Amino acid sequence: MVTITNVMVQQSDVPVILTAGQSNADGRVPVAELPDYVHYDYCQWSYGSGDYLTATGDFMPFSPTVARKDLGDQWGFDAIVYYLLEQQWKRPFYVIKQTMGGTAIDTTCTHSTNGWFWSVDAKEKSLLNAFCKQIDDCLKQLPANYDIKCLLWHQGESDMTAAERYHDNLQAVIAHIRQHLVKVTGRKKYASLPVICGTFAKGSRQGSPKVAEALYQLEREDRHFHVVDASDLSLQSDKLHFDARGADELGQRVFDKMKGLTNNRNNMKSFKSTAWLLPQPVLIIGTYDENGKPNAMNAAWGGQWDMHEIIISLGSHQTTDNLAVNPELTVAFATAETMVASDYVGIVSGRDTPDKMEKAGWTVEKAPNVNAPVFKEFPMTLECRVKQKIDESETGYYLVAEIVNILCDEKFLAEDGKPDVEKMELITFDPVHHTYIQLGKTIGHAFSDGKQLK
Image (cartoon, rainbow, N blue to C red; front, side, top):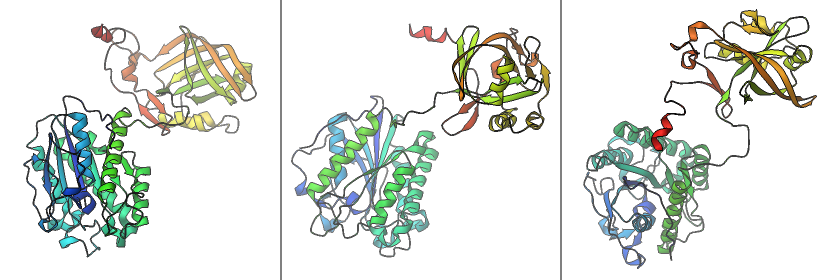
């Protein structure tokens, strides 16, 4: 028995599934062995198989078959997937399938059936080109609200003699399909189209361990590439093709993987706890030492503490040395223009780089209201005074500072006379990739736009 679990689909969508590969995707189980519970009411498909059957853009009701007439009607794991999707969606959906047994990606695999390959290099014998043309023709027949959900892929047995290149070859195939979909549809989301790929049964006579490892390597590298383990599934006596039980189970596993992707809130991945609060500011803290020498440091862990107070998490720095003798500071906001020097003052310490500020190249003036430096290159600066040091130790503390005054360069004022944040081209620190990102344009009005939902 199969388990029907939820695969989410927006009611406005017309779902489309892409299926491609070689014989186990084409299907090699006699239709007489299709489980009794399987029937089809909604699935429409377009099927192509190289020069065995040239696909058109026309769809017809799905019925398991293969292009090679000498084999009779056959089915594969995908037939189970379509049945389970029918039971879930209970409305029409479409399958675009291009499969051909015995076909490789690598063109050095000369045994590939009839000289067809899953590579664009094969030109007129390229199944990849045929598949893309089939997709183009099919999409023209679909309503505008179609949505391609994923690509089901099973292939690789015929690439066992070029297994060391399988990772790069399959990666190129997937990239080509995704890029083609973006180009013909104009939908950038297809650049990350989910791909669900099955492995081989352990006893397969063409199941290369190197090919299988390439699949798992792609899964580690591409979060939209998903591998379904088939190593424990049963085979026919030819030791190559899944038997009815194996194909049935693989179809269920592929369906479960689809369910996992869609039910996990658009394929959300979990990460261990770390400092990824977003967005993080790029704060430039200015201080004087006991001799009046200016210093600056870059800090990201800070924010508003109260209406007239801010808080910044500080380690042990020249800045904390300076604040110990002179408890006043300025806090400026880094911009795209000041990004390089702002990063510099965050990676170099004033304790061991006496000419740090000279190398930063900023123009220094004393703040009008506190004993701290103002760096003229920054559009906006807070003049602050230390109010409290929380959890102070030799490794640092949390600094709570009172905002005494705010300075803003007049060229960064809006028509209402207040600071124009959009003009400043402020940057934010990306703690995930350790990059700086420039803030964008105004998109709405706080405490106002949300009222339309009341």
